[in-house]
Image (cartoon, rainbow, N blue to C red; front, side, top):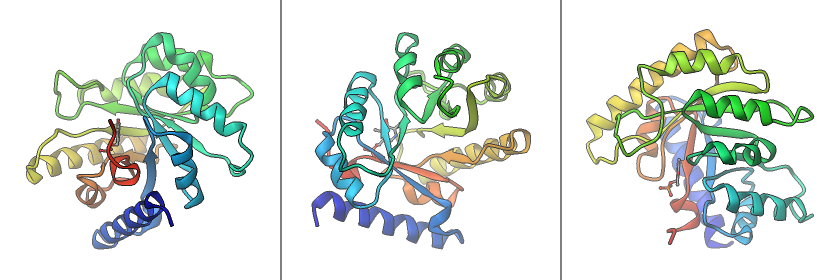
Amino acid sequence: MTIIQKNIMHVRQQIEHAAVQAGRTTLDVQLLAVSKTKPVAQIKEAYMAGQRLFGENYVQESIEKIQLIKDDCSFNDPICWYFIGPLQSNKTRLVAENFDWVQSVDRFKIAQRLSAQRPTNLTPLNICLQINISAEASKSGTTLTQIMELAAQVSLLENLTLRGIMAIPEKTQDQAILSQQFKALHHIYLKLQTLYPEVDTLSMGMSADMQLAIASGSTMVRIGTDIFGRRN
Ligand SMILES: *Cc1c(COP(=O)(O)O)cnc(C)c1O
């Protein structure tokens, strides 16, 4: 077994442990393998360990890798591709054409473009709205006060399906602050679910804060470093 395959097994065990501790099951929490900056050969190792959901941040890099993988017959099951990085207007077309999900939608203009540019022979693009939960100026994401309005607008777009929210919490060791932010996100998630029946994704939790995120109701953790190792 390769290091990446061992890492995936270990992360899955951690997810299971955290889920059981929280009275949930592993089936409630999906694992998104964040493969940004990592080569196709490493994605293949994760794929061989059964991983099918991959997250990417950079448009050009990810399109190249998605194309290489499409042309490589050793990937015979489909991979589900998630775009999770900051997205500028001039890059939306490539994302609309090549990804299954975008979890980093933070303004209506981007959503409109994604909907208009989604090829109609594909299923609607799945969308999570990114929330800047700590309201840090350096971070992208919509705010808590704007989220419901943005959700209402996005839910009307034809070639998109609103599936939930994504957030990167504050970089802090303070468990109380983290827990408070995760709880606030869970609260919004439940509120969105009552309004939009297709909402089923609360994407929160990364390598460092996975356990608390799962205890707070996360349905998807996004793990890069703990699977593929450090990035340069
Ligand atoms: C890079 C990234 C991750 C993965 O972070 P790690 O600390 O490497 O696990 C998760 N979510 C987003 C949005 C990212 O950009």
